[in-house]
Image 1 (cartoon, one colour):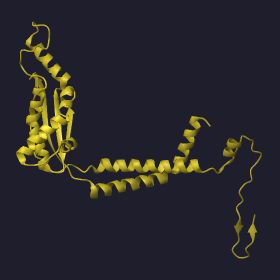
Image 2 (tube, helix red, strand yellow; image 1 turned 30 degrees about the horizontal axis):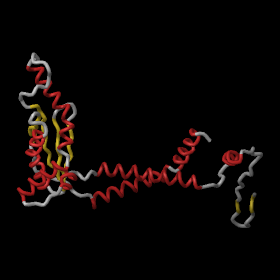
Image 3 (cartoon, helix red, strand yellow; image 1 turned 90 degrees about the vertical axis):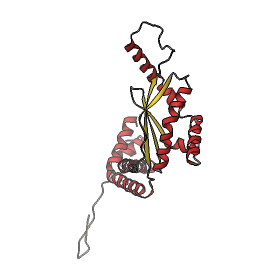
Image 4 (cartoon, helix red, strand yellow; image 1 turned 60 degrees about the horizontal axis):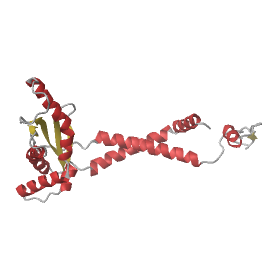
Length: 249
């Protein structure tokens, strides 16, 4: 049997059992909803948006000294964009996290660790710009705000110290303490549950068919043993009368 025939056979089997697949998918959706409602942890986020830029200095970004000021500014912006991913990686190192943790612990008398920041911080560049967004998400709005607020100072300092003050970052959108928790994501998680249930049902149906070695029809018999079928015995329906018990063949 070629590949196309195998695929057609699998699709045929799944179509015959579509009700079972739907049932499993609905069960997966219900399970995901119940799990989300009872076990999903509420989270709170604070965001900081930075703009990366080249500071005015004696360092030249081009070899020519006759370029107009507008072209020079464009060159600086392009350079900042080009280097953005490098600085994003720098502010996700253990050394940087440790410095941020030390500052927060000194200010608030807390005992946060590097892992606290690694689990909480997400850095996202804004496409085709020199801007990037840092999102801090934890289970406590105060913790999220403290970390995000400290990053407003720590990120520009790290960028300046890593390139002799050529490139730094300005805060374009300051951190605000979250007033409400994030959505539990019912729609997304229920969709995942639906798909997972359907896949589980499909896998069960296919596996069951593969383990079933019985010959179900003449075509399968001919395919397995490669012999011609001379004839088949039809199924007879036996009817029994109500009074005399007479059987009609």
